[in-house]
Image 1 (cartoon, rainbow, N blue to C red):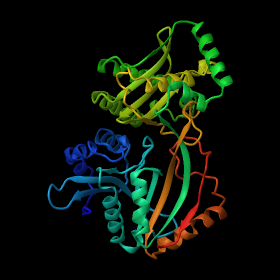
Image 2 (image 1 turned 90 degrees about the vertical axis):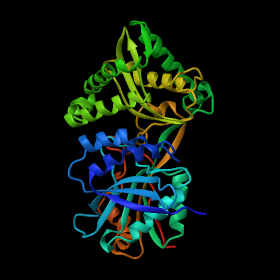
Image 3 (image 1 turned 180 degrees about the vertical axis):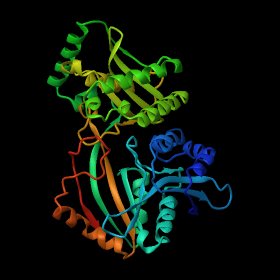
Length: 399
């Protein structure tokens, strides 16, 4: 029998914080992990990064029996366009949130989407549009969403899609690297590593216990702020609230034993560093930075090669057993694209129910973007990342 879910909408952030125990229980049994909506990551974001957004936290509970929380997604209310009296519900994606996959308990992907679409159909006529973005366009949740839409009279449009670097560890390290780099590139990088080692003692280090996390955090903030992001004012340390959020999240991940802070050091001084958050059986690359004075030695790519090596090392105490890693990157952005052979499709999806004014606006949206000369802009990219890559505009007729 297909389970049914009851939708409860929380609008007060304090109510969500009060539901932490239920959220944590849900996170222990997810069909697809998403660190960005887990309580230890979400709550610091609400504290430091949320402003005057009008939130609609959708909590989906099992009906009858145990009444467990089986689904969760934070939405914000907005306008489809400043000149149109049409409202939208959009998954919340702050500046440090790179994936917006809803939290759904294993075995409830189909019921989750049917319950969400039924909730959307019950909204006032001017509010029946759901905006999903930074959503992996593969896997159980994506397949269940497509199936749920095919069973309902809904008009939907895939407005944007790109391929993000993704690593699967089924092959050996050497085979993975050979599929992503030519022999000449690997020889050049080996030469750069030798030349860098001639300048001093070269070593790769990771966190050595929770006592070292504060030092690693401040080291990363310093390196990132010393480069182009610091000059552009987009480094984490450039914004007091963002820096406070980063410190809180890194400490929380470390307390749970889910943080790796890999660094490339020259004579003990970090010249490249990256933080990766573990979500077994996978992981998410969250941030990386390098000292631009060593740019000619490609320290960021050398560090990423070491990270890939550790992902394939069965003796690594933290990364052994992991089968994938999400770069959290935009299209063709960062060293991950130089070292990782696989790609993962990431999509932006707008969904409306029935023939409402939203459906008309949705059908005309691609034409309007072309007429306004906005076709080359990426409305679904993670902020501060590259905009190149594949784009698709698809209109599906009501079923």
